[in-house]
Amino acid sequence: MSRVPIPQRGQPLDVAYISQLSEAVNDIAGQVSSATYNYTTIDTIDSGKQSIKTSETRVVGGYVVVSSDSVVTSSQTKSFTYTFSGDFKYVPIVTATPINTGKNSVGENVTVVLTDVSRSSVTGFVRYNANGSVSTVVNLIIIGIPN
Figure 1 (cartoon, rainbow, N blue to C red):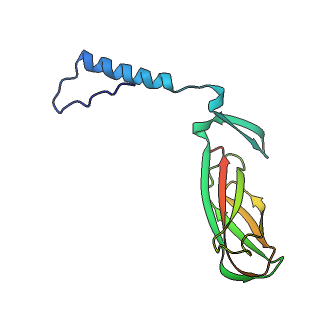
Figure 2: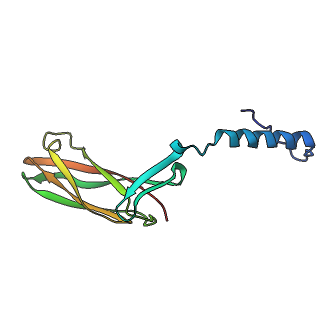
Figure 3: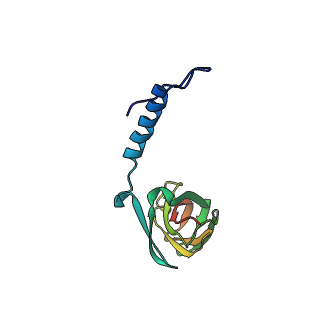
């Protein structure tokens, strides 16, 4: 794709320059496609499968520090809540991944359970399956349809 030169101050905008702008805009329009692979389908609890343009989906990435150098026992749980801007039309899809920030065997033996997902927050807990000191973070990916 060609680049349109930026005009100098005071430069007259003649037909040739306007033509270059039009060609550049047409080149961009030709590269933007409305093909079906540019759509994202999100299966919502409220209204079933919804397909929208991928550029119109909303993705939130976040994290919650659940424990920081804490001593835990096997089967102990620690709850967490992550709040985000509530401008989703339906309850979004959420993926949670535990991160062993303490880098020890206790942090490698955990389970994350989401207990509630709403249009503006995620609640869950981490279950520790070993005894010892641990530091844990939960990474969250939230994908949905904005209001």
